[in-house]
Image (cartoon, rainbow, N blue to C red; front, side, top):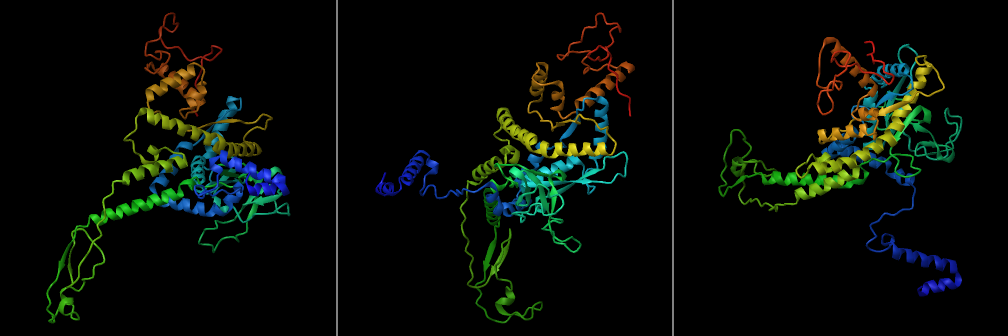
Length: 527
């Protein structure tokens, strides 16, 4: 202890002990030290919502500008959206009854194509746009819209996709159950998110119109109303416990990507200037006699000979005459060989900040090989599956499915029953880097029980029930027509050898597919 600590110890021993402990901790953790090296840290002991509050709108608007004007940022949005959603995360009904499952599939397929209340998109397209908005702006909102019972064959339910701007972030404070419809259980509001007991989310304060819309002549007054949680989906990736609003995924790379864009712009301008090989003519004629130009009667002397002598721009191959006494001096830009390394390292940092790989963002495969590509895809696949199973499926898919089923039951399209109508969600298939090896590995995994046959079929983006039905119908028709195919597993094994037919009651003809009881599997009747 130093002299000051000892003096404090005489008056306040507890405070002196606390100072000594803090100094000891600083010596243990270099990252907690105070000094010149640590002066650049912006270490604030604030909550996630306090940090988001002032940065929400600037981050969102700058991320959108980055996506509009930076090709690499737009590429990142496409990469993440295409891998997380692809052509759609589709449900496989699993109610326990084949009849109900097929009924659910038909109802869902009919509803999905017209899920958007604006009439422009299907549900799978809305999935992709919602995820894209979440990555770019940090969050997105889907609102459930109940429709009237006009068509007895269709579930009366649609979706409305909204940008995060619709959330009224200025609703911040005590907005409890003050008579506003749907505010039951609301105790306070943080950044437009209604919170109840234990900070449970109970709804959002939504503006009736987009706050950034310019044409407001036919719009309703901009007073936000409370929408309960069971009427909407608030999609965002939660990064800290207690966080109520989402942050743009571009936040860690905004400065890096902006500076890289400025650097590339400067490199392009420099290259354009260097490409302007021009010639200059100096007029040393001291004559001051008047020279009449019929086309320009007001100009005489040297002005008539060279009326546009002022130099303001350069063009390739230009020959420019200068006035007497004028000269042109060029800056001599030095050639740089650092463009490619700077671009490489910055793109790697940007890709890592968002969660992509460098080759995906840049398309540069010069130094890649099978092992490096596979290693990168394994990490990216884990991140993608985590996002699918922890954010997208619970928020968008499960919530929409539950609402769809409840409205189908209320409209009489599905029978009411105590057991829930469950569904398994099928994510986009992962394209193999080496198809032969990857498919062989999947087959072995299914044969050894590491994955079920249903999971194997679903891993390639297919509905296992439909695959079985279509296969049974295909081979039944082939047998009836007397056709044989090499892909028929009843004729050849996986190595391509013909299956033995000794004792075959059908005289060597392929046997029909059978179920566990030994009964032949018949194809379903065509619709």
